[in-house]
Length: 67
Image 1 (tube, rainbow, N blue to C red):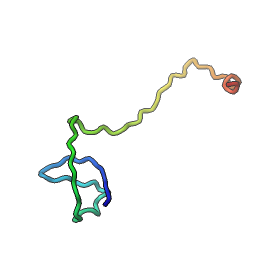
Image 2: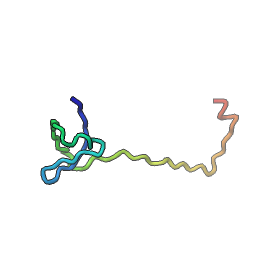
Image 3: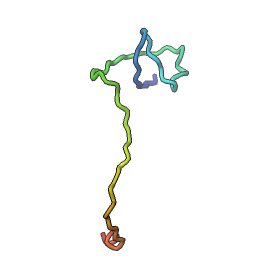
């Protein structure tokens, strides 16, 4: 038995499968439903670029290499 976890929002008593599980259509599956108690959809991780202010910074190669 293969186990797969995904999130979905049921509608009209139907749970949609993600596109990568398209070949599971018509197959017999076992379903366990767990309701997200937070009430909020899960947040997707996001990457934010770091911004550094370097105005006035003096780089000394000799000092950096000495470390």
